[in-house]
Amino acid sequence: MRAAVFLGGGRITAALLAGLRLAKYKAPVVVHDRNPHKLRALKKEFGVAVEPDLLRAVRQARLLIVAVRPDDVEGVLRRLRETRAKLAFVACSLAAGIPLANLHKMLGPPMRWARAMPSPVARFGRGLTGLAFQARFPHADRTLVRNFFSQVGEVVVIPERQFDPFTVTYSASHGYHALAALARAAHDLGLEEKMARAAAAHALGDAIVAWRDGKEPLDALLGEAATPGGIAATVMNSMDQDGFQQIISRALKAGVARARQNAKVGRAR
Image (tube, rainbow, N blue to C red):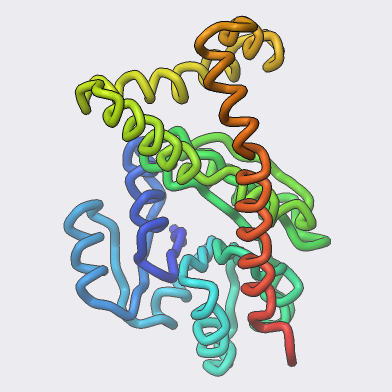
């Protein structure tokens, strides 16, 4: 049976492998990386097959997952192209910002590409993966890609033009960053550190899960939680007056600008 082959043994590969193990995924998985210590660590932790030779790894692939940094994508695909080997796999890139058209140019026809943006929360089986497919991507191959990432959480298919806004919005870093900031502020007010984190986690995590799993509109829940003139409303109004929404908007725009820098990879040919 041919395998899901990861090119790159970094953090997102490790998170996906953890999620696949949690899901009891049985199909073969192979990881290639140029760093032997990464391969040894992944083999030890997850029991996956590892392959230090790029071409030998790729020849095992039914699904090839390019999980290297955006700046390294072109070099990896150039090495594959230069082998002039007959390649037969479904190609999927995790490289943020690099468009499908650029990927297609870098490796060339007849390969068709998908883009995937999986969350590191996949490690816990609660990930969210955005997918975009190149035109005329075969239906059976779409199903293969969707089924693979659905092992580690929810999957959504979105137009590629929305991929950068999705990428800068869905990141678990927003939750972790907000949790750290809220807990730190509570601790500065005198709340014991462990309790500060528990209170902040409830404010963010439990509240959002309640909205996601329930039927109440978000505005209604905001009104329920922040009674006019009350403490919660005072806190929320103070945040808004200090530019909370503007800070978020500026941050997301900066992220999109960074993704568009990545889009230059492989463009000129």
